[in-house]
Every structure is written in C-alpha cells, then in structure tokens.
Amino acid sequence: MSEAVLSADGVARAERPPVDVAVGVLLQRDALGQEHAFLLTSRPPGKVYAGYWEFPGGKLEAGESVHQALVRELQEELGITVLASQPWREMVMDYAHARVRLHFRKVHDWQGELQMREGQQMAWEQLPVHSGPVLPGTIPVLEWLAQERGHAGPRFIPVDPPAA
Ligand SMILES: Nc1nc2c([nH]c(=O)n2[C@H]2C[C@H](O)[C@@H](COP(=O)(O)OP(=O)(O)OP(=O)(O)O)O2)c(=O)[nH]1
Image (cartoon, rainbow, N blue to C red):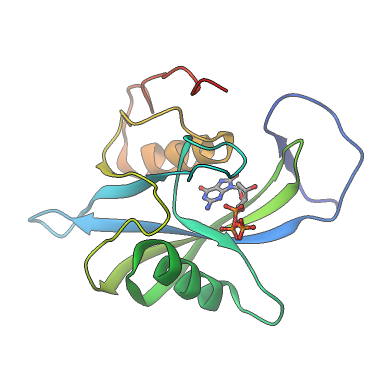
C-alpha cells in the first residue's frame, strides 16, 4: 500500500522519493507535569520558506538514525544537547522544492541554553500559535497537539507570508 502524501500547495506532482527529515517537538511541562509550551523557530534567511515557523530539525545524513540526526541538527541550530527523544508521528509532505518524510520526535530532556545559531527566531508557544506564518508541514502537528490536549479553538493565528 502506498504511503499517504500531503501536498503543501495543492499541486499534484509526479512521485519522487522522499528525503528523510528529523524534527524535534521540544516540550516544557506545567506544574502538574502535563506537556505545555512547545518550541517553534523561524526558518533562517536563505533557506526555502525563509521566515516561516516550524519545529527545529533537518535532513538525515547518510547512515544516521532519526535520533542521531535530531541530536546533530539541534546542536548545530540551537546549541543544545538532546539527551533523549521519543518517536511520535510520521508524515510525507510534497513541496515544489522536495518531497519530505517528516519524522517527529518529542523531546523533554536536553542540556544547554537555547542559542539561535543560524539567525532564526524562537518562541515557546501554546495553542493557538501566534508566531507565523507557519510552514505547511507544521500545520498537521498543531492539529495532533490540539487533539492530544482537547484544544477546540483555532490552531494558529493566520499571518501573512514574508515579503519575497
Ligand atoms: N525542520 C523542519 N523541517 C520541516 C518541518 N516541516 C516541514 O515540512 N519541513 C520541511 C522543510 C524542508 O523541506 C525540510 C527540512 O529541510 P531543511 O532545509 O530545513 O534541512 P537542513 O537543516 O538539513 O537544511 P540544509 O542543510 O539542507 O540547508 O523539511 C518542520 O516542522 N521542521
């Protein structure tokens, strides 16, 4: 059976092998130990969808596991050491620039202070997300979080795309 593929822009394109991407959903807990705020970062200048907000992460390098890629990417981008990550969801998304298989992992345990090493911005967010615009591949994640949390309102506040 073929894998479900979501389109980022509604355009039907020929099938392409997906590129694997490790994505971290960093979570803070509230006083009761419930998952609470989650970290979003903006895509750095010079990358596709620059200025759009996403969960931090990046492409796997040859021979890496998803966890290993996540540890490397979050060290490079945020200057933190991920101590543990739990597999959570997977999704294939088709963009004009690439088809990506997104491996989302929840992260509760890390060491170090957050540093924006690539000129990006960060925000600890709750639903509805106020930072934006959010990347198409981020919207389903907000939906999953809303379902887990029983959040009935909007998932994010719409924000115009950055000027090209
Ligand atoms: N990091 C991240 N990427 C996402 C998310 N959702 C989503 O569709 N993507 C897509 C955008 C990109 O096409 C791809 C990640 O590639 P990237 O260009 O950010 O990865 P990278 O850091 O390895 O970049 P580079 O070294 O190739 O410049 O995954 C998300 O929540 N986080």
